[in-house]
Image (cartoon, rainbow, N blue to C red; front, side, top):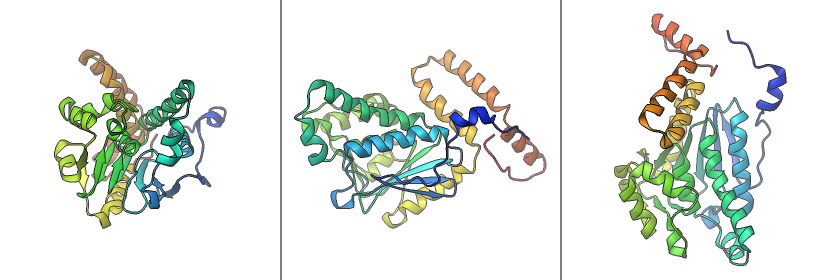
Length: 283
């Protein structure tokens, strides 16, 4: 039996989301899975300055939350997210100074950093329009379930900007390859559900009326696994982008040795010997 974290450390490294009530999106906790719903269906769920910041803060805080083992992000209605709100973000941006513009673009990038840094696997449930910053949120997720009718578009060049937004030029090529990423980022065209599945951007497809159920079931399945091991896997997938092979192998050797010290590793062994299914507790 592992020792609980010292109370002195717990004060700064453990928080609970019980009672969490965000102002700019919906939040539910279903067992060990947290569900984020972008909730402006009349406008296809666009982001605002406030929702960017609140989402960033949520994903940052998830690093200190133990009871949540996986996250699902969806949009209300029949669309995922139409990107930055034209009236509430795009219009004001045209009136800002360079320091303010840089503060905004760094804030949006911080959302992606927080999604990649949180230890929980993040699932995107993608239906309908998934454009601009919405496409970036889907890209920054670990796993994506979409509908055949979904349309994912990195449409930054369509509004006179560069395709290099919020890490797109670093992350998207690693998912679909350099050539395919170049196609999407230069043209701003929509990637349909079937094509996205063929390209590896989408991991699975589901019918629209089964999308959330399918994604939540997958997230719940992952949430029963060794959460410490999952967090280590996510960290190494991210860190090894910039490593050479020898450095990566050494880093994985260290990571695996650390995981071998967990109680979950011992539980898995004893369950195997007893011909039972292990029950992981994340320690």
